[in-house]
Length: 410
Image (cartoon, rainbow, N blue to C red; front, side):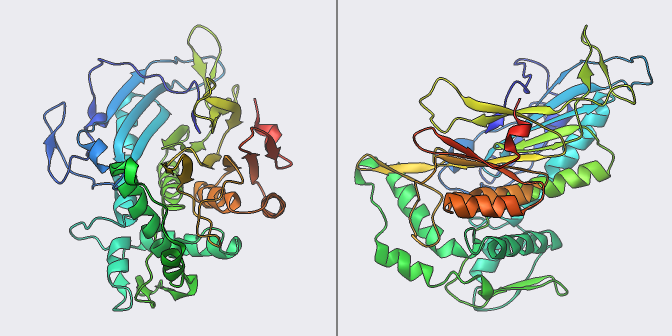
C-alpha cells in the first residue's frame, strides 16, 4: 500500500527548515544540507536494513496550489516533507497550510514525536535517558522498568488487541520472532546457506509468549515481564500506534488537513481542498473538500500494476499486511515475516490483507491479526467492529471484501 498520485516531489530544490530534522547516520552526528547538526534517531528496528540507512536526509518540497476564493474560502498551500529515519522505512508528511512557516512548525513537531515513539518501541538499541522495549526485555524476570507514559499507552493498546483477536496478534511473541529474525538475517547475508528454523527451537521459544506475563502498572508507569525468557516485539502495532498518536496531537495543535504515510501505514486528517480549475483551491463553507486518494498495493510485485485499487479516505487510516514486504527464500520457497501464532510459521493463506478504519493503531494490529485468521473468522471480527472494513487478496489474485469496503473505492 502506498500513496497514489499524492506525492509531488521535485529534485534539485533548495531544502528548507522542515528538512533539517534529525537523520540516522550510524551513532554519529552529521551535518545536513544547511550545515546544521542532525542528531541520530537510532539504528532502526530491523538489522536487515540498518546498513541501508547509512546516509539519510529529509527533503521538503512545497508546491503552491491555492489562492483566495469566493465564498469565504481560506488560502492554503500544499507542502510535503520526506524522512528516512523513522521505523526503518520512508515517511512522507503532506499537509495544507497557510504558508511554509506554519508547515515547517508542524513538520518538525511530527518528526520529533515520531522519533520518540521510534526509540521507545525499539527492541535492538539502547538510547541515553530512555527506557524502551529493549530495556524491558533486558530486565525480564528481574525487575520492573519505569517507562515513558507513551510506551505504557502502546503496550496497553497492544495487549488489548491481543485479547480482541484471541491472540492472533501478540506482542509477547518476541522470543519466536527473534528466532525467525536471526534465520532471516543469516539467509540474507548468505542466501546459499538459508535455512528454516527447526520446529523444536520454535516450540521452545513459544513456551514464553503468554500475554498475561506482561505486567503493566500505569500508576507507577512501570512494565515487568514475569517470565525471564519472555520478550516483547511490538512490530505489528508500534508504527500504527505512533502514527495515530502523532496525528491526534497535530490535530489538537491546530493542523486540520494532512496525511501521514509511515512506510505505507497511511493516516489522513480532514479532507483535501478542491481544485476548482486554474490551480486554485478553496476550503471553507462553500467547499467541503474531497477525500485523499490512496492506493492499495498489488502484492504481486512482478506485476506492471503497482496498485490494485484506489480508495478515497478522510479522517481514516489504510494499513496493509502482506507476504511481499519482508521475506527470504529457502529452496525456492518464500518465508515472509508474518508468523502465525499457532503454526509458528508464516501462513500463506492470503497474499495481503488491507484494513480501513479511523484509528491507525487498530488498523495496524488488525491487518496482522486478520492475516492469521481463516476468512470466516476474519470477516466475523471485522463485521463486528464499527467503522472497520477489510480487503483480502489471495495468492491467485482473487479477492474478498467486508460489507462496506467497496463504498471507499474510487
